[in-house]
Image (tube, one colour):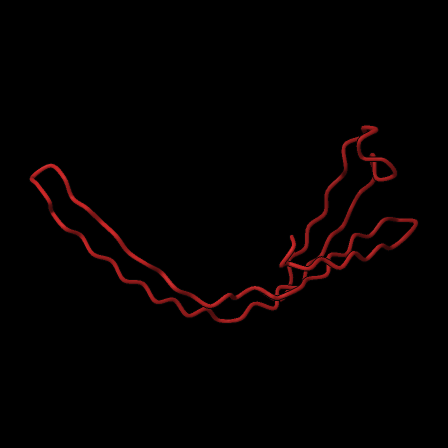
Amino acid sequence: MDKFSTSFIADNTADNGDYAGETLDMSMKQDWKDQTVYSVGVEYKATDRLALRGGASFSTNPCLTSISIRSFRPSSRTTTPVDSATA
């Protein structure tokens, strides 16, 4: 998937400020990378009714280090960069 796009109408409430009742279109670039995952697990049957399990999983991160979210209104365009490390 190259990008994720959606459109919705914001609730017509004061909490939505200038966006109240507006149709909002949003598109996010999805520049995903392949992910490599290594997993290992063990189980020890301590008794007939008790099994102890443990494991670990290590993987690379397929997400971008930063993304840009764009929201478009009929009267203006706003671009808000978001750093995924703090989001």
